[in-house]
Image (cartoon, rainbow over all chains, first blue to last red; front, side):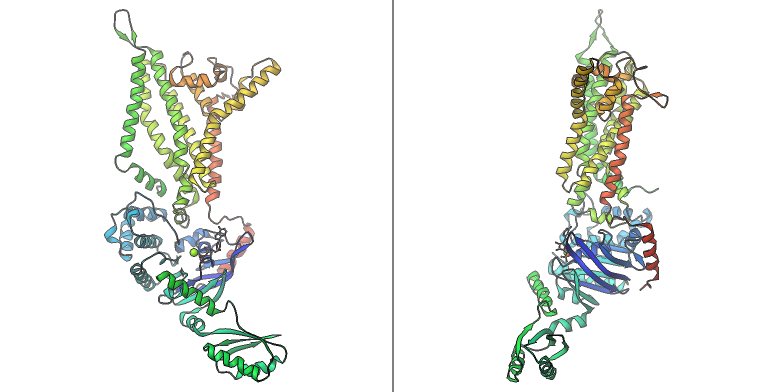
Length: 311
Length: 325
Ligand SMILES: Nc1ncnc2c1ncn2[C@@H]1O[C@H](COP(=O)(O)OP(=O)(O)O)[C@@H](O)[C@H]1O
Ligand SMILES: [Mg+2]
């Protein structure tokens, strides 16, 4: 449904998105996770046809965004991270306006508006002025607005940010309902656990690059336990490799010209035992360290963000 | 044809409640008062103590009203349009419009229409009051229509100028200030420049500049075009008094500027008709509006496409090859 190939967006020398690739199948909810400034919003704006990519392609159900932006706009519903509403407009008038924008024939507008307001649970507010709605209600109204033309793909940029816990739960329920309707959804958040529940797949993005991508289970397994350890020795790297391979807590071992990388699954005590063992076996270890920017640290980063945010 | 949704929505907001009808009523009442005071202030009493009608006084009201409306147009339109695009940016509603299938051109046109609608509505509603002058002769229906067309062209030009600045500058306040600076330049800057140039010209050559010269400097100035409409319409009336006296004071060479009352020979001929100042002015308005609208549309186009056609076709083919998921 959505294919992103080697997407690059530059602002001057700065790369906001740096060679991002991604694929989402029809009917899936894909969670786009990354700290603030990772490039999520930029990527989503490019998909929505609001920014021109420096490089790369975005294809929505067979249509290339840079070839036929209007064709793509017909297929997607986009909800920005920050948006405003017009003053002096009632909820139904607001919906009616966007119905007009999407060229919905007049006789159908009332019905569509009614259905969508039901879906996002705003029917009771249909005669209220939009600027009197709470943040969560505005968010839901904007979601209803993005569904007017019955898009196949939904791009939701941090739909839960700034919402209180109850509003978040309501948003989650609506997402599940949309999934049930067969919509494909790309949803972003800077908090991993928030997405884990609703998404079928997740991609973690940092500094414009996809760090890891896969199903929720895969990601959680990968990120929850493993650390990557890099070992350097003065010489005799083979003996170090042999020793590491014997350790049950080490896996995914790779040897390079002057160092070994291995995934480590265990606690710090085991780690110190391994180091001690290597030294006692006469292996001339010069460096033994956890790799920076490993999945673990990204994950920690994200979950910390989540804890702060929820508090 | 579908109604432009931007127009529909904004008119709905603007015309809601009592604001719009009240504004129109107050405005018309005000214009009526000007007419009334004009009559009152220059009442002509005949020897047998009967109040008589006096065509020049009727014309006076006409000039005053017409000038008042021009100034209103010139100073209200920038305020109405200056925030049209930048305001949507500031309120973060622009992306919501641009991520839909609504074309940037519709957004621009809709915004211009809505922002000049108010002023044009006021002016259209005032036409009957201007028309009271018919009762006394001196002004024909064509004069009134030409005047209205002139207002419309001026409003479109000022409206698209406001939109243009609004699409260029991120902040509404900046775009409004730029709009007003431009309006002041058009109204008075051109006169100052022309005044300086013409005095140098006269000093050097010993003859006053001709109509062609004047037109070359003054064609963008709404007052210039407006003056020629007023002069052209009055049958032998002298320099108008009242508010429109402004024109004769700010343009010292008013008589010669408009060709005075000898309209048949002085203006350059163009396509077999006399190219009068208001025609030059309206032409300028339309061309400039077109450019403003064009640039504004490009400015808000989200993902500008400057790719070559050949590359487009190629990637279109590739896009078709990729299987649908
Ligand atoms: N218009 C812009 N000009 C320059 N840099 C920008 C612009 N928009 C975004 N950026 C930068 O691009 C990076 C990615 O931003 P964004 O996509 O908004 O991240 P996210 O949504 O993941 O928080 C940020 O570092 C941001 O500062
Ligand atoms: Mg963002």
